[in-house]
Length: 231
Image (tube, rainbow, N blue to C red; front, side, top):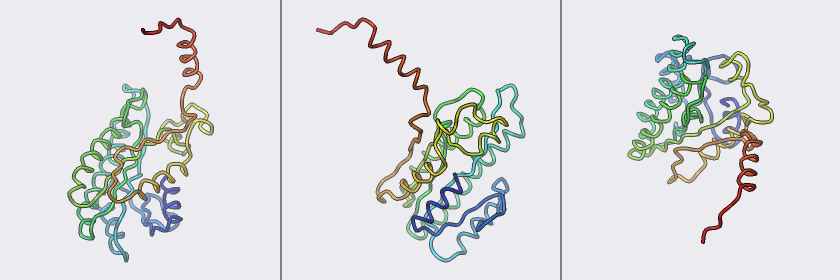
């Protein structure tokens, strides 16, 4: 999603500074778990010509397991990347952006932050934390000219699933899931809205990411059941 978002924003005319844990291409390399590296990445952005108008917090990791099989190291990793890095980067944006009239922060959350899922408990916990932080920051941002948005993708066809489960998501992702380009286009759309609009919760989901057979069966049940016409 991050790579697709960088490309989409550049195609839209934005000057983008990408931050990644891995070297490759035009990126600022930083492990966002380490505060000194995170702050150095912010400095690298601020030192470049122009304003810092937009922060997209997209970095995230998942490690899915049943509750009784959760590893402490996995919990610490998800908390450090998904929550702590998002909070710290947003803190720096709130310190810097008001100096030039404000800006926008967009947090890529997840529908996992809206509803718990079995096998994803710790990941859901981190995303619920990001949701709460995003909503609170959005209120504070009103006072200093910073719009804070939340984008909540459902299933996306990326390498995330291999890292999270070591076996993939267990569904036909090519049919049921969105692409990273779908999410990136939506992010550009949110950031392109008029400056008086705030989009705190934009949920993205593929039309095919659902139990359509179950939905059809339920509707058929209602249609075939005897109906009393109210008088």
